[in-house]
Amino acid sequence: MKHKTEIVIDANRAIVWRLFDDPDRMVEWQPALKTFTHKAGTPGQPDAISELVYDEDGREVVMTETITARREPDFLGGTYESNWGTVIIFNRFEVTEDGKTRWVVNTNYNFRGFMKIMAFFMRKSIRDRTDTDLNRFKLLVETEAARKPS
Image (cartoon, rainbow, N blue to C red; front, side, top):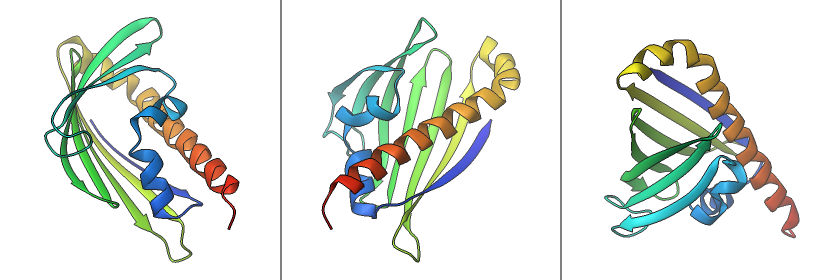
């Protein structure tokens, strides 16, 4: 299953990237995230490996993140492995004509086993979850940007 979504954030790309690239802030826009643990490599750089643990309605989901590409401040790609399958995510950050930041997320889900069937029925909730996370991130960034004096 493939999914593309985008959102325009009323902040410059430097602020967006700084907050996006900070694993300590992830829980603020991904509230299901319980822990983020760096395991190997240089954090945030290609080949870095981290473990993310999510609480999904009382079920613990452990994902292994591997950063596959990074071009600061406009691109970050990674793979996320779990018992349910593999997710490939590409994040692009583009400067708009009016100085805002467009965040474009391309996601490719490759589910395993029973989740292949369930994904068909969960397609809308998966998309809604992504959109909700992006909107939470937008609020975090715009709130942080509003606090900074011009």
